[in-house]
Image (cartoon, rainbow, N blue to C red; front, side):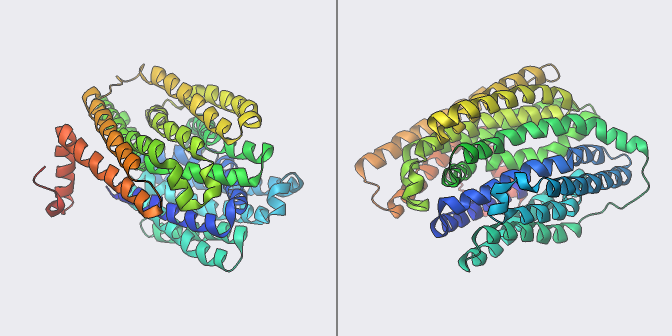
Length: 473
């Protein structure tokens, strides 16, 4: 619930701040910032080397946690310093970052993450996901607090990048208070253990980054920064469909690792089926609502320039549905200590993704990037499901999924009727349609699905706010 709260808060913060930035600096400046984030994500993955995920895995197992953390920190420092030196030597090849003034901020971000990353991994490895997610939320709040006045004062791309760095630093300082590991002598065996696991995890994580960032880089290469800005704003807009799955999978990772170690496979299988159901409980109705109202929402919130991303929005909302399966299947493979299998699956998807981006973006622009992501993520999900089925029984809760579909369809019919009879002439009428659709769907799913109703009621009561639960349901 802590993770879910922060995912809702982060989505709201990102949504509101992006509206301000889109209307203040425009799609082109936002495009430069999103390119910076894409490079930071990919290069940051290289400097981490996959050791962060390996450290979470080994620390979560509860054996020699301090030694594994110490080994990871040392590796992270070596990899980061080496990466920064290589970037300085190859500076001339990053003309787009240098021209926009983002290259220096890229180096600063990597150095800051060299300290903040191990702290966060240590907290996660100890199972304190509520703390980690809270600090991630604080990071994003601090980021926006710095970015908004910086953009207002005219710093534009530098203000956006500087705000991100400030958020990382602030969150790391707070997270450190809950950090209970310490440096000890470590052996080559600890490094070897991390390396064995991280090798496959690094390759798999690199593949995930291709899915999330390669389209941005290819759009920047074949098209303009304005197109990058529109595409990434639309992509961020679809994040509302994913915050429940993000909260669940961030919380589950250390638990799946522990259950795997203690051979509690039944808990692993049950958690997977419930995780998928509770993720789709939001992703499917958001897709339906986006199809019906997406064109008006983009134009009303971000400006008419962004309304031309409507068809991209529909495709990317479908991506979020497929991503539920793809991410959980590959995440479970990693947590069950089969990262090599996860990599093999992801590698096929990565190759197809790059090829489709190169072919489709020059032909149909940002819609081509979205189609490439959808096609390759679907392929990846199917392959991951096939491999995961060798180790556990993958079950879907068919009755629950049927209830989600029925509730979404009924909501779609009612919202469609709303739009047919009431013209969406301004933003408030459009927002009212969203609220109407959300309330309708929420009531329907609670009425149709008694299991969801019971579980949600129990959660509300356990966290001490049972008085807000509508007893008439």
